[in-house]
Image (cartoon, rainbow, N blue to C red; front, side):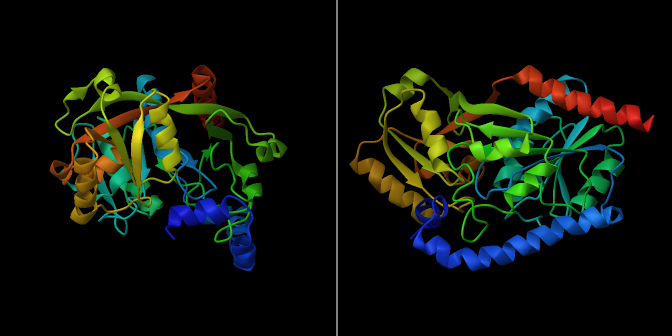
Length: 355
C-alpha cells in the first residue's frame, strides 16, 4: 500500500490500524510536549535574531499550503517596501545539512536547482528576494543578517516546531480537506504535535472553505484562503490558453502532500480529467515513471499532462518525455486587507516596544 493510500485509509479516520499504532503516538506526544516545555522554561536557549522573524508552519504532516503562503506573504511585504528574505530547510536537497544562499537581490544562483523542489520553487518565484536553505535555521538567519544588512523581516518556511529560534510571529496553516485527521499524533494520525500547540500560534490560516471545528476552542484569529489557477505554461514558458486545455484530453501528474487539493483546483476550471498519476510527496521522478505515463498517454490519446510548479522543479530536467503543461496557482486570501493589517500591526507593535 502506498503512503498516500495508507494515510487516507488509516490516519484521516480512526481504524483498527490507527489504534494499534496509538501507543507509539503517545510516545511522540510525550516527546513533543517536553520539547515545547523545555523552551518555555529555558527561553535563553533560543536564538534571537535582530530581525523580525515570521514562522509559517503547521501541526499536521502533509501539504497544507505553507510554501504558497510564504510566496504570497513575501510579495505582500515587499510591495509594502519591507526588505524580506526567506529561510527554507531545503528538504531532500543537496544543502539540507549545510547552509547555502540560493538567490539574492539580483539573481537565482546555480545551486538552486539542487536545493530541493520547494526551495527551488521559492527562488524561482521570489525574484529579488533572498532565499537560503539549511535545516540549521539559526545559522541561516545569521548568514542572511551578515549578507543582507538592510533586511527587515525573515520568513521561516515550515518552522512551527523549530523552537531553537525565537519567532516574533507564528502563522499556522491547515487544509480543510485533511483537517486534523483522526486527531492522533504520528504515527497513528497526521498530527506532528498535540493540537494544544495551537495556543502558541498568532494566526490560523485555513486553505479551503470548510471550517475546522476542533480549532474553535483556542479562540485564535483565523483567515480562509483557496488556491486559484493563475496560468498554464509549457516548459519553454510558452503560455497555454484555458480554451486549449478545455478542448484537450488531460491527465494530472503530482507528487505533493494532498493531491486532492490539486485535483479540485483543476476541476474548479471545469477541466475534465482522464486520470491522475499520484506519487508520494517530494517524489524523485525517474525515467521509468515517465515512460510508463508516456505509454498511457499514447494509448489513451492524451494531449497534455498537467503538473504543479513544485513537481516541475524536478520534472523540468526530464520534461521532453511527456507533453507537459505546468499549472501556476496562487493563494487567494478571502480577507486580504485583514491579513495584511494583522502582519503589519505586529511588526509596528514590536518596533514600538524596542524603541
